[in-house]
Image (spheres, rainbow, N blue to C red):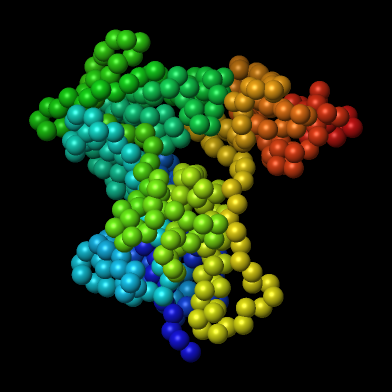
Length: 421
């Protein structure tokens, strides 16, 4: 019987989801996980509560040492990778240590996309992606009076809320007029902005950052333009939450096809035999990923591919139930809780062509529902404040159910519609 080794580069949420999919009864002799971080896997989604000191690192660390031992998984912390040798099936770490693999999974994630503005090289200019970023923010708190967060997507809003919870004065800047413009429309953004202002966050939209002036080697201000005018805001800390860049440099240097990310097929296979990629580092059909739901789907595909791969090598009968899975992009219900406000969205909720828009607004209560309908089928949903029926709306959207019999009652929810039917 041949021995088999799986090497995984990266120890984030995607990699650990694959390990969960593989389970304890796998056919691998060893699984080697290489991480450039100094601490075990943690839930990055919970960095904002960690920053606000509403939780602890232990609380957001899902697996203990025994969990990995039971699965014959060896975690190698502080092992940044220098090179992948696909011909020799080797991964070479910067320390010089080598790991040979039979199959290789690239789960290298992404990094903050900090724009190339003058002054962004200062030590008090951070992203908001890792525990290292959070540690730097917490260490700065004793001397921190004011922080500027640039980018009001989900991470930017969470960073602003987390710092404000620590008593720091916070200004949140966004280029678009709509906060979280990938998940919200103008009305929903207005509800969120009102809540942020209530919490003491200074929100500035329509802002174009220009440079970060320095004082004593640190960024001391943000110079920006808005409405045709240039302004300067003094600050002690700058956090960029302006998007992410897939970590694909290792793959590209190894001759693996890359575009916007590491390119994969529907079974998460790269252009090199027995090398797979998953998560924020990969690209499928021109798309890259930043939310958890599609990555969980990818993990099922990768887990099955690895089961099949190693079953072949060690001559384990597959059994009729063990079949390949193809990754398919699909609509996901995006569930967010931002600054205490529940927000669920799905589909094309900003569509206007050949569409009808059904809306319910109670802005005093922070409630907003929007259903976009085309040809008597829901194609987009946005729920803020009252999200009790969002799962049902998602089913109607996914199944493309004809909603004409309940159209007039639809905004009042499933129970109301069932009573009216």
